[in-house]
Image (cartoon, rainbow, N blue to C red; front, side, top):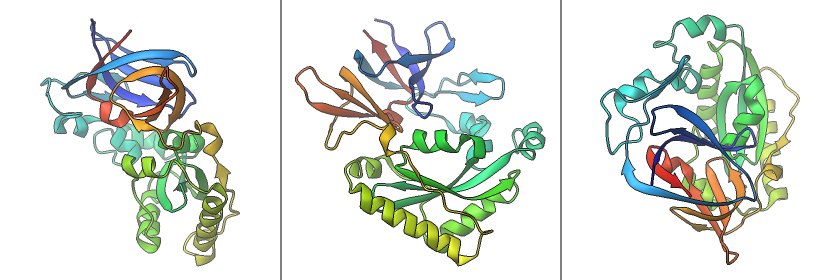
Length: 261
């Protein structure tokens, strides 16, 4: 049985995608189909996923084991440009970034968890879906990355919004009162608008809850064996042959090796 190395799972574009390094060293996107039956086994061994640059994906030079991504590869990874606005490793990307629109957004998970984050404006909807946000709203738009990250920190400090949402929190908020959640979120968005600390904006709350499978109390699983129902961010859902619903935390699977049969 041949095992592929899972680098990342993502679903923000509507697909169920395993980004994998195959045994020949190539990196490929393995697309899974919703409603298809799958049998995927994950091994216990993990290894560093390596790092990504604008030119592609590269393996860990030290082949670090028992870690999702070693410190050296993390410091080289281009993701820091997009998650932190840190262009120190890729100064050539800064000139292009200055021409792009960035948005400051609020994202709601369930009824009570609100995150404040940054993404390129063109990726707003995909960013909401790849996180598994139920509602989202753009609260400010900036040209280039220079001001938006400072505005993010200011908004988080002022209102206590989360900078990140843990997977366990997302699991705990799969079942919620949708009307109450939307009302809570709309109220928070209006509070931010009325505070005057950002340029005035017209709140446009987007509902993303319909993109996800309606699974309320799935059991957690370590492998996949059944019909795929879809994903909510990095939570992948399937139904067993006897009708039980399960969920796999695919964030934890990054760096592991898997076999698909």
